[in-house]
Structures are given as C-alpha cells and as structure tokens.
Image 1 (cartoon, rainbow, N blue to C red):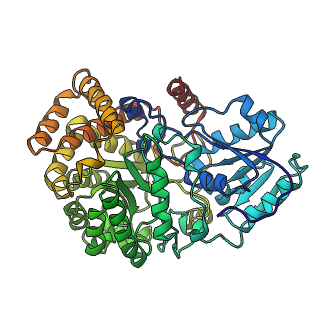
Image 2 (cartoon, rainbow, N blue to C red):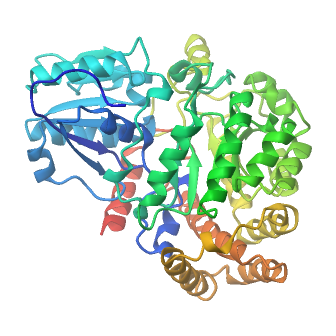
Length: 537
C-alpha cells in the first residue's frame, strides 16, 4: 500500500543509495565475469520507501553501486532521500553534501541513522526507525515545504506499519539485470539477543511477517523483468525467527516454483539451530534453496556463552553443518576474531574448524561494536570503546591489537589459499550438491540464462582456467565436479573463488579493513574510491 496521507503539492523525490565499501561478501571482483553485473543486490529498504510515496509524487531511484547520481538528477529533485548502513557512513555524508550543494533538502533514514543519529547532524531530516507514522509525518512536512530547515529535525517511528501492509519494493525502478542476486523479505526481527547484534533493538525480537501472497506477488514482479538475477536472497534477519510462519509459508514458495518451472534459486540467513527443523529443511530443499548464511562466529563453545549465542550449540556444530549439507544447503558462515574469550589457541582452533567443516565461504571479521547493542553498552561501561580510524576495530581487545590482527591475516590467508579453498569446494561436490533436487530444464533454458552462461563460462575458462596462477587447483576441483555431472558447480566455484582469492590478496596487502563494519582510514578510503571509479568506468 502507498501512504494514505492526502497531499496538495507536487513533489519530485530522488532516492539515492550509497556505494558499498568492497568486502568479502559482495563479490565485486566477480562482477566482470558476469557481463553487465555492477552491484550485489537491490536495496530493499529504500525501494520500499520509494514505493510508499504518494502516487502523485514523482520518484527517481539511483543506486550508486551501479551508477553515480548526476548533477542533473539533484537539479531535478525537490528532496533527496538517502539510506544506508554504518559501513556506508562516508558515502552517506558525501551524498548529503551533493544534495546541499544543489540547494536541496536532504533526508536520511535506514539502519545507520536509526542506530546512531548523532553521526548525521548534516542532514535536514532524520527518519528514525522503520516505515510508519514517522514516514507519514515526513510526507506531510515535505508536502508543506521543501525548503531546507533552519535546524535538523527528527521523525521517529512509534507506530510501525505492519509488514502485511508494506508496498512491494519498487523493483521496476532499478535494472535488476545489473545485480548479482535479487532480494526479498518475508520477516523482520529476530528473537535472539546476540551481544554484538543491533537487529533486536532496531527491528524487535518478535518477527513481523508478510503474507505468502505478498511474497509470491513480489516474486512475480522480479521474474517479470527481463534478465532478472537467477538467485534471490531472503534478507530476513533470521529466516526461522518464527518457525511456524516459515513452515506455513514454504509450501506456497514450492508451489510458486512449480507453477513457474523453477526460474529461481534461493538463499537466506538463519541461526544454526535450524538443523533441528527437518520439516523446514525439506521444504527449503523442495523450494530450491541452495545456500544458507549462518553466523557461527566461533567454534569455541565457551566463547558462544560470552556473546549470548548458545543457541549455536543446540546441536553439535559439525553435526548441524552436516545436516544442512544433507538437504543440499551449502553453508556460508560469519566468523569473529577478537572476542574476550579468545586465547593464543583460538587462531589454530579456527583454522582447524575451517578445514574440518569444509565451509567454502567464511566472512572472517574482527569484532566491531555497533551502537544500540549490548556489546556497545558493556564496552562503554568498561572504557573499552576506541575511536581511532587508524585501528582495525573500535574495540579495545583483551589480547594485543596487533596479535588479533595477525591472527586475522593468517586465518584468511589459510582459508583462501587456492588449494584450501578448492579442496573445500570438492568436499561440497560430495556432501552437499548431490542432495539438491533436479529442476525442470524449461525454467533454465531462457535466452538470458544461455547468454549469461556463455559469458560466465568463457570468462571462467580464460581468466581462471588459463591465465590465473591458481588454475591447477581450479581444474582439479572442476574435474572432480564434472565426473559427478555437476556442471553448475564448476561455474559457481570458479566465480566465487575468483573473488575470494583476489580480495584476500588485496586485504593481505593492507587495502581492506579487517572488519566489514569498521570505519576506513583515509588511505583505505581513497583506495576504495579509486577502485569504485574503475568499476564505474
């Protein structure tokens, strides 16, 4: 649904989503292999806001991960809307400066400003919290005037819009073919209280839900666009936050896939205790889920207690991973170094876990304290928050900072050495990929998929298989997959490994931070900006 606020003025709203800082998880090095892909996934939040605007208002949407907003875009607008996460803080401020240079009112919403509004005194209107009564109040203000106010003003949501009343994201305003994967939301919120996570404070512990009918309608909108991504990611904070609702929704998803000849693959993020839900896992398999991101954080059981994540131990960790693999789900994992419980043995424990679990993709970060988390509050009381952009984290670790960073460097070097990485992919060929369902060829044999496959296949063969210095381990893994008839696995491992190996080498040269959430120092920010400019060119 759109806003029901009656408006009398005609307004032009420019929605600008800031570029991401390069990271392990956005696979930016692999985009050139795809032909035309420029960004990771469409930004759900700002697309929902765009769709909620009054029908008589004009809306223009620009994702700066695809193309930079031009001066004429700012000149066209009456108001500039921006949203983003903490990692995009620098880019958010920069968009605000461009809006003001054009004489336009700048409006900021989203998770970063909702968690830390004090970071953004340069924006005219701050929208704090989710879509709801604050959004309607903001619309009323902009209907009255689009003059820049004398002082910044805050609009804070007290009455959130039910997810079942959310408009479908304005997918039609972005070129989906430019994204690596699509995005979809079923629920918001998470029942757990992991110490380092800001989700419960921002979105609540009682998951709120869309209806299955909404979900299917949004999928219809995605596949209606030519050259849509082949994979759609559920951006839910925890896909099984409400197990009953997920169990009831999945049959609708299975039926949608069958009705449309399985045009999509799905991925999601969830807690590791989903291994205790065989009915949900089987439905996910039938719906063609391929990947689940799990915040494992650490293989050390005592450390899980310290960060309020004992639910990860509801099933023995290796047993849980094997269970997910047995339903065709390739696990990707978040890992944190720098926990208070870390010892001199933690690094080797992590390396042993990487090898034994055979999880191919792990985002290994240093602990970073985010505003509105129990971790932030505790470290603030203990005087252990540091604000030094030359450091790799804002946490004063129990162990020496350089020792923790050294552990991170050695861990990623091991995890993403070509030999180790492709060995883990070979293991997936044996324990995961054989358990996936066989989908109808009619859903795959489209001109878009054929073109995409030809481009990707050519680039993997040439860039990875012929000209890379890791071509030998790649071909060994590819031969292992081809013997099992797993052609798609060859494409996937080549694509993913190409990014991970290159990104790791850059990180080991000091070009990237040891935490996806950390502020960049000037040198790294300039390097990232140069990389972004090259990508845009």
